[in-house]
Image (cartoon, rainbow, N blue to C red):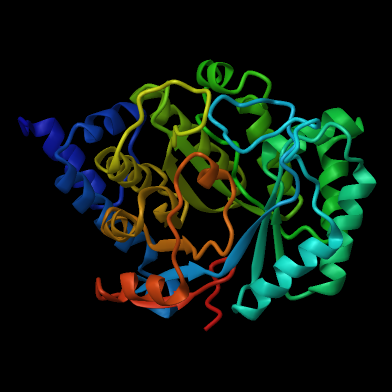
Length: 363
């Protein structure tokens, strides 16, 4: 690669913590992977320097939580999803209170602090069903944060319940909702969304939910699922829209990117591997200068790449994933316990610490 004066200037700006634009991001994307990774690691250090009483550079965090998919019935039929079912399928389900109690009891016994609760877009579940579920969980397990319902689910709720997002989210918070996951982000470019999930929330819808949630005091995460029909420029556009929203409301606690998992899905697209995953995670760390935490996606990449990602901008290894049902349906079945996660972190010379949803240390 030819290092002219303009590229040298760009590299210096990134090293010093400066904000880059989309054109500069496209140029950084073309760097050799190890050089891009070194820049991302530098930006991680700058972002975490003041965290945890000035020890942020020495600490890598993880969370103990459980994915709870309250239903697999869904009427948006995303081409990239192998999890959804229609109401008449033999294995379609809606979770019972007894079943969710059992799952949370197991989570608490393992030291868990949170459930990540998402589901399909069920056409017949009522507002009262959701309020009752949240109230039941919070009443029985007040120590557990309910990190629940992706933006696309809230857009579905708005259509089904015929209420505003403000009213729905407010009722959910009153019943026990603590934060919102960034699922359904995919690529925040409507050309892409109309190809892979034409019945699902569009880009402005996804961002509107996050805007309302942040204004009502809820934090959330942001995500990107890439490596299918999008271009590199569209990935960067996704990062730009996430960064602009964060500039506006400051409510994103973390960003998580992962690659499309193709097995058992209807989407026929060339997938990408670990090299491309690390490249995009590194670029995300540099571009998202206002989001403090970048999470490694070992669930889709495996433990080894998940560990390497800690040198490509990530400061968090995510969840031990007591349960995961969506990605595993697409053929990816990596698993990890607390001891495994601590070992991966400590083998790189970091201190492994458990955190909660808000990145507060809990041990």
